Image (tube, rainbow, N blue to C red; front, side, top):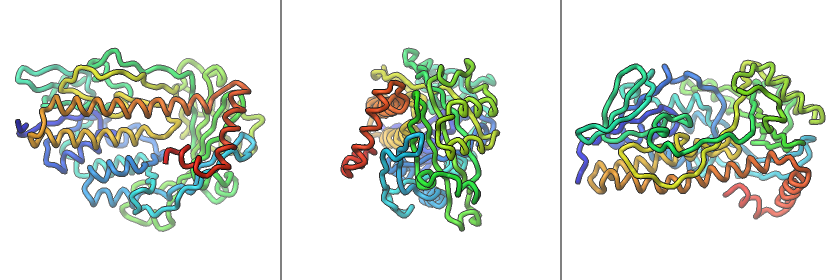
Length: 418
């Protein structure tokens, strides 16, 4: 039966929710988005996302051509390489990446969160409602589903999409047995403007792409540069041309010796905690931490979702971090959410056309999403455990593995999953 006038309600105006909204609007399906933030830039930092070929295909499928072109124009220079180093800057593994034009469909699109949300929000001003924190959903007597908000208001639709992030209230109600747990790792990050002095002082691999640094006692550091073509900043359509070097330092909670809530830590104290563990690190890496803008430094406890089996499908479903929240150590969370958005858009378009029943379509989407989403969760968790191994034998084995891969080119592509 054709579901005439399908009404889709999305909770959360993040990357996945907005991508889905753009795709549904493109297919003339009624959609509204409800976001707890009071504006599009609330709580939004300028760190970049690396949009992979998977995320790129999802965005191209959902966005109007003009917006996708704008996304390409706002992407930074693609990375030339991925490098693994010791904390003394000794090479463990270096993988050259094909230097592709941004127009190449397989090319990475490094884009800032600010630019991405700005572009994904374009043309949706009439359907995005800010200041709406969803606290619960209820079944409607007419067969629809209603969402209730903290301000006492509510709305109804034929299907409700929880794209409201790792702390999703809707997930807690829909599948209360789904768990998100502490990993025992704390991450601290900061950034510094990419001035000429910073370019000269930054270890060259970091300027060429993601650089992963294995330190002693289970300490790990990630660093990368965000750079743009020289003429980008003069473009009126450029949303966030900030050039910078960012770093992230992570270790076990007891190693960093932080208070119970790392997120409450001041920038000064977080920087001091990192530097206290870097006495034996290369001076250039210590310098990056010491020179970071204090206001940019953030700390958080790393958590991960626990895989679950499919549940009894309702007219409420989940997207992105609302279900398969993962650690940041593989860099695939946003791309997995974009994959969700494209898949869910296809399912809802089929429902709207009368090709499939709503519950049937949602159930098929959920089964597939659970499969690939939690595979990504486990991949990310394995990388986290490998990078933070504290035992001497485990760290030595990891370094030996990287050195072995470094000498066998076919293994390099396999290691990155290409």
